Image 1: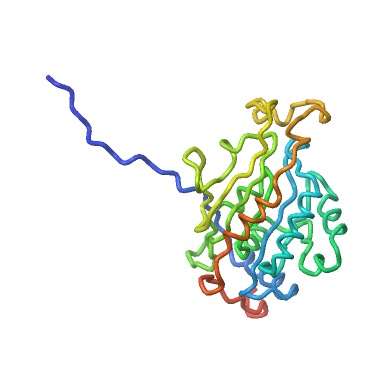
Image 2: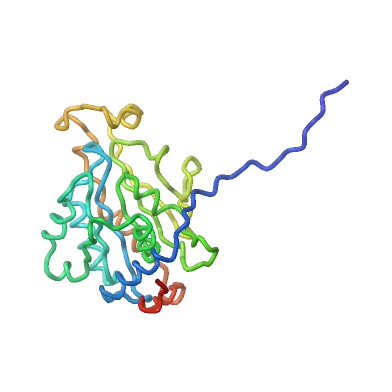
Length: 255
């Protein structure tokens, strides 16, 4: 008896992770927005300079140049600069080395924002720039309100920067057939340093790895800040196509 031929079934396509938030996160976000004079029409870029270890750390000079290029383009209204946890003080260093003109466009965030508020703030932004670290995955996830309302836009482009670790495992790219896209209605892109000494052990053993930093090609190499800033600016939607939710006055939020 011939074997039964099963009909071809469509392969399951992983759409990405989702996170569920409650209204308290929205209220805290809206208070922050009003205190910092952010309007629904503003074009915002969220910069997270933290990474998981010294081999993935992006030097402050890179972010200083990136912020300068973005602000000088005239297309960005405000930069949200996240506080560093692993490399404490690097965010303040970046901010303090900016010129007064660039500081006016940059908001240095408070250190201890709850993750739910952090995720809500990211959703307000047009782009999110990050090294290889946990908050990257929060930014890439689809934000949903726990009672099924839809106050989130989920239109944040995700730009992830990789040095020693492997982006094929952790990164998000909407133009790659071997990486998943961020779960956002916006492009995602990986920018990676490629050097001869980089191997899969840099990813698998990234916590215990003990290469001499002075001999580590990934640690010494620099990313192309002009190329990255161009991608961010090119991915911005025209004002006429942007959909921004009105920010309610926090006094209207129920306790």
